[in-house]
Length: 531
Image 1: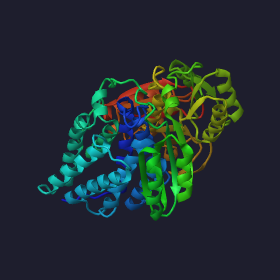
Image 2: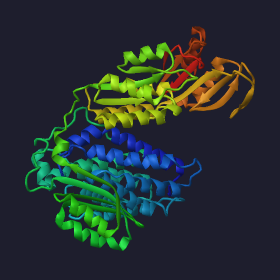
Image 3: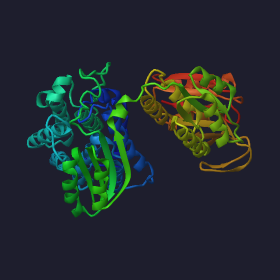
Image 4: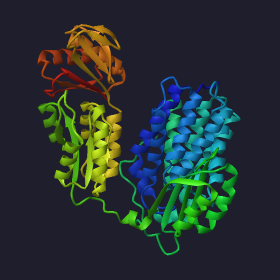
């Protein structure tokens, strides 16, 4: 009963896993008491998988499953953050070493073999393995998969058993590790692994992953309580280019310097993570072994002492084209920066808006592909001045509206950026416009006055009716799986047209909620969003 690994299935899993890690990020951060109680395990796990997804985003649509898996693994290795992120990267990479040979047919035995390879790779990567951690959870999943595979030839059921065993092992981690028992929490890294395994089980079986708890767990110990004189003060991470046979020598040099040593990689590229007091010695060990780059040093005490809220407040700057969209932006807590369809914003305009706000935290929504580079340039200037700035690569204004809808001014900056990024990224978008002259589009030739439908940035439909074209766009945005459709009407879309579109959606997809917003934008009679 073999299971085929396709490019589409693997890509969908990688994105689902990243989304679930984002949703669980606060919870996992709060569980973080080992190896250092710096409340970043969930953050590191999430951004490690973001790096993997960003790597495969650059691939062409016809990429083979093997190349997709290889690129994803490289992205995890290059972008792994923290102790948990580094181990997760090696767990995935270890499993993919087996799965790459099973693209045409994944059996129950292959599932067990992949989980066993993942567990073995992670244990080998860690300098001093500690039970009651992510390693223990990975080992439990592997054992359960092997036992299940001896009696069941369905790879889906075997992985479901392994996922359940991981959750059971996670619940037992406080009985295996005194530090967790004292804090009254399960292991944060193990919880992150359960999210990853749940995402695979969900992708394979359709079983809904364990929901995130309504309340975030609070450890009994205060953050930083274990940062005493006996523990290393710094986290050092770097990528290293070196021959694989130089790694044992590197491990030997790093082992006496501190703890939490994790070295993962292969084929000439390695990711090194260690906690030390002597930062220079850790970096010098890398230089002696090869060529370190992307060196990162974190002082734990400063990280934990970082204030939760800035003194200057938070600015969300969104580029808009119409007064209606500007009003919506203001109502949602953002600041509108106006541009016209025939006039892009400039770096100076964006920088002036940031400087004039006096904000210490800034979230930028470019809302146009041509704006992203200049928003990044303005962001770099603001960072040099001491502000925390995130540029969300929104290319249309409906993405910004979705992102603004999930903003919570009471939550930490990083958490808000993740939530807004996920909301914007999950928004399927389209538009309706009128051809100004005869021409050729990706959907074929068009004449002046024709109605053009835009799907995810490309001209995909040529028609004569705004209602018909808009509904066709919505269908191509997968209306059948939607929960909500948003219609943003421009100056050239009358109320009767938007009402007809809404009525047709309700008739064809009664499960979908429809919201109509007056954007008053030029050029595009309709912006469309599907969530």
